[in-house]
Image 1 (cartoon, one colour):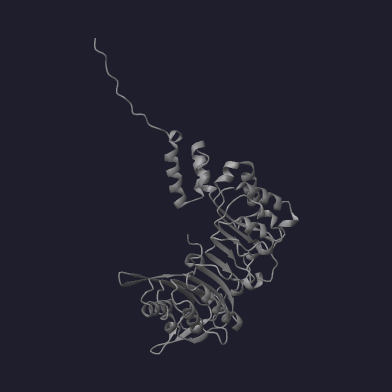
Image 2: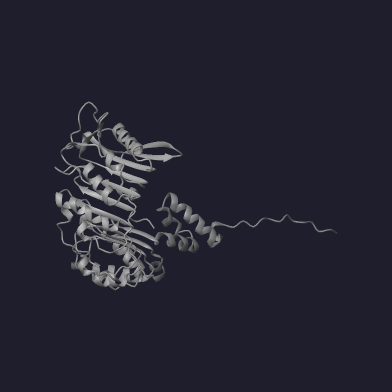
Length: 404
């Protein structure tokens, strides 16, 4: 008697039986769309939790977090060395009165556990929502011991929390740092000549803080709108053989006696071979001015590839054929096209300005309801120029300071 054959049922793996490689791919895809969903994946299974935590703890942003969230993170990495070892990038906001609480010790213990940390940014909570002019009058924290003896080896570091003079042990130990941001350092440079030997990108608060004799490739400066600050641009010539990128945060471009044209001409004279150049005004003013066009000065750059310009004080540029008003989206595009026409080597330009929401009136900068920030991004592709409008100038998006 012949046996009857039973159909073979395919083995279907449930989500709890997926191999680690598949879990990792799923977590990577979730990160692209909604990072918050990684927390939900942690509750599915141990495998998903391991893969999700690897991504959650790799890049940690605690700049705008509550004190409770900061304490929770510190506790998690202090108790779990595996989580701490996964941290690669950390942005940390700290209160100015941290030294008066036990949180300082918690933060120090947590950082000491992050042995594989490569990129660290530490900010003062009071910096958030405060103008740069107000913040520069504040005193930095003297609690450098929080980071000075940590075992990690950084490649990128940003500090606007600690006083740089209290970080001598940190600078001595971190020989791998390539990018350093100390935006409120107005001089002198806090490191000795033999410290930070691999430094190639630097942000400081004034040209007086730039170190001599270093082959810097990228510089980002905060400049006051006065004649001494402007004249200090000439010291940039010492970096002419290596510098490829210069970004200026200017307060304010249209200071009496200092024009955009004069500033661009000075930079072009000192650094004609720049590849990336940009100027931005971070703060609004209650006035708008007219200036001569800086396009002629831009033509003196011989290799410029990218350029950005964000103004909140210049109303128009005088051009021989036709003035360019900088108070409408159309004005942003017109000036951007003029830049691309003046500099044939530029492949990407970004223009930011204050636009008037009521076209029948001139801009009243004191009334935020009648103005908004607009941008125009121009890209040269195969000889054609493509334009794209926007409503917010994002300095961090155009800055190349943190490039690899």
